[in-house]
Length: 163
Image (cartoon, rainbow, N blue to C red):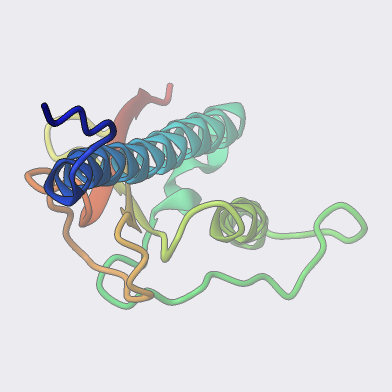
């Protein structure tokens, strides 16, 4: 009578393969989860930034046309050489300073952001705001967004009435 106790080498190898597959599946799930969390953070940041921009435009409704701007195709930073809180500014200089402050904060929170502010073609009191960011963090901005793929150029938009 053979009363061997323990596991054979094949049983141990099969068990190790099953455990390895489980661990790899869990690791992939964790990586995907972290990616989704980051994408949601970017989307929330973009929504908050668009709301902030809309409030800046609406609170200065008499200067709304001075806020019209786009860096979608160029990706250029918007800068202001004037501090309007300590010196007198024209409407255009004030709007530029507001946009520069807003965009500077945005660049610290979104990868490769680009935006545009335009008057709607159907109503002169309706301003369309668009914000595009590099969700894949490739380091290269884009003038268009891709809503079909998760890791691509994502965008947010908003329309605001300025009376």
